[in-house]
Length: 429
Image (cartoon, rainbow, N blue to C red):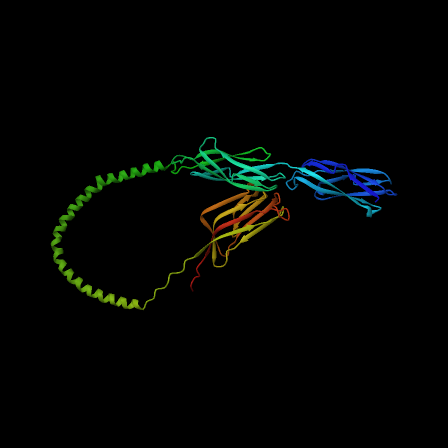
């Protein structure tokens, strides 16, 4: 063997965002001057530098190079022991190459962010929020969630109360906000509250939010009620002082006229009875004719009702930075899609523009930087008939941290459409 190499520190501690160095000594045991090159193998090769990169050593002499490791402060750099190796490559005698093995112990670091989505909700008694926890460290963290109301007007409950977030990922917890008392009338009242996310090794994140509580009866209800009561009182007064005397006078005159005509009506009653008997016989004959006609008549069945089926449609878009991509859905022939819920997802935290179009018309235009998870609910379903498309279009500006299993850096937002697929009855020719 013409080459002997060894590390001054086979095991080296290093922190992400900083650097650490180890010396590699090379001894030339051969009989000629040898030049050497160096290669770092393993995961640390991406953030390792050898200085100098080449050496020329006389026979029987030794020299050293310095290997500097500078792991970036990213979730993709795992904490704990990371093995590596350095290959020493002689130029004159490549068959005498040697490999020296070492180990880096990467220190863990903690970096967590939390966001309340949305910050303000409106309702008569309840509000819906979400807490998004993003782990930007290199170790999994357990985050405890809690809620508080300094005025004691709200009950703030996270579900779940604890999250385990892997490195480089974000997870969500629903936050239910409920007013302790109903508000029957008056104007809207704003109740502030706080959501707290406490993770391992990090400072607590305090997020301010508010619930705008609407009254069950609007402020103008009292004025409308007073106006209705005044109108009822006016109608009663008009009846008592104007209409009732006129009705009584008209009734008296009508009774006198009726008594005079009563005698004439009695004599005419006998004639009417005779005519009625004759008409009864004619009606019986007419009924028999109608029954004979109905015997040959068949009733047509009522047209079939539309068939409704619950449906969930997912639109996924993958767009590289600076590119535009779309995904669409068109109802099948003879059907119509009635959308009741629209849920937009941005799990990576991409930045860019997201648009929802129906038949080419933009219905929603949103900035990806403003949300991670956003939903809309429609009281009146949005109808998309056959022949029209609902499209998700994304203009990617900057992709967020890559999701596990993703093959490349790209924006990956999505949309989930909930609703009904309605099969329309065929029109008879």
